[in-house]
Image (cartoon, rainbow, N blue to C red; front, side, top):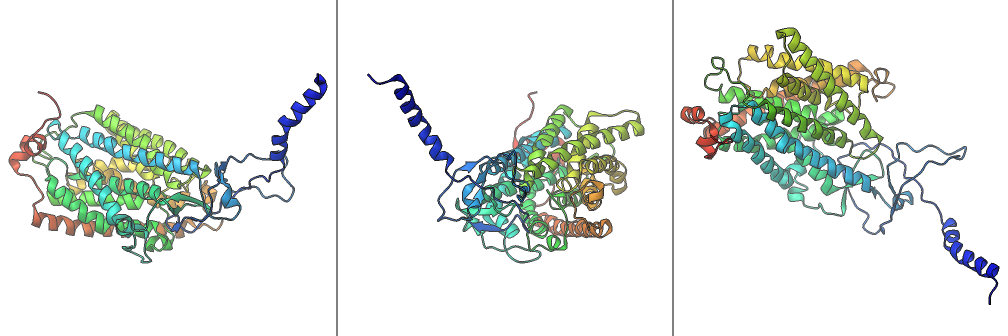
Length: 496
């Protein structure tokens, strides 16, 4: 019979052997995260590199004296990148960007659809829901057909190329750059995320001429405007060779590309289609502020994917736009309500919802470069400015912008884009460089705002004229009085 001590020693030796072998293995090293020129350039994956597991890096209790702290390390690092074998695809980044994409989809359907639908009269509820639903679907298909290629490829300053027409050359093996040198995203994820931006921009325009425009005219206009306004502006602002990108314009998540672009198109559309029958003479109150509040809430939640997702990585760089989105929206909501209370003695639920949207719009271009205190100021200014936009300015223009697309998105986008040039200054809490000059950056931002306004206005005017010649813009007076739900779609939102 063996000695119990010898048996115990043999068991311990066998048990500790694997741990000893693992202790002698080299530890994974962190891949440094450094900013790149543009997150929109696409690089092919390193197909020859064997996939390596990811590892969560923990801070060392006592780092070496000459060791440099990592700059904003990713949550999980592909050890193949650390070894110099190629760029890494971080699972956390991929999961975050897929989640952000879904959040933006929820902003559109059902968020934006319910927000707009509640603002309309009951007889037009379904027509608005359907227009948002169908425009979203159509633009998504146009985006993958030629939109992505025209926005994010090529070397032109104003227009992209057909290099990736119908997603030619895009596969599960191709990668898109982020803001870190070795951090990449699957290109399909980047395509999907940007598709939601294109779709919501077009859907925003729908609210301006709601209740009186033919759905056939809406769809034809969207094809033209998406092709000749959204895509060039997106290329100019977000692609590395774009005119405004090279000029140094700051637009983190789409103040110019999305909101000013859509707001101007909506204003031109409301003017071209004409006012609703009875506008200015008959009361046209929202039929369901409950729907509008639910839609605004979904927009607010989804906007975290819109703004924080624009960081393209699940790093601390996404934390700043996340917080800025919360505080700017809250500030704008309170500012709008305060303005209402001062102006007419009462604050309204519609005002609170509209103020929230105004804050979300204004912080969009600034969310990744201004500090939280700057975001609060931007929200306050946007709340008061957009309240004036949907009251005083709307009366001055005399245009029936049914959902106040220009008053909120146009005015809010302009406020946010311009103030980005102010509060990005590091001494005001922003992330700008030490040599940041407010006046110089403000001029660059102003140039981007003016160019976007002029570009969108000209394209919109021409597109509406063409559509009017081809199919006509407006429904008949009889159909408008009956309501588009029954006259154009043969159904009703509510049982009678």
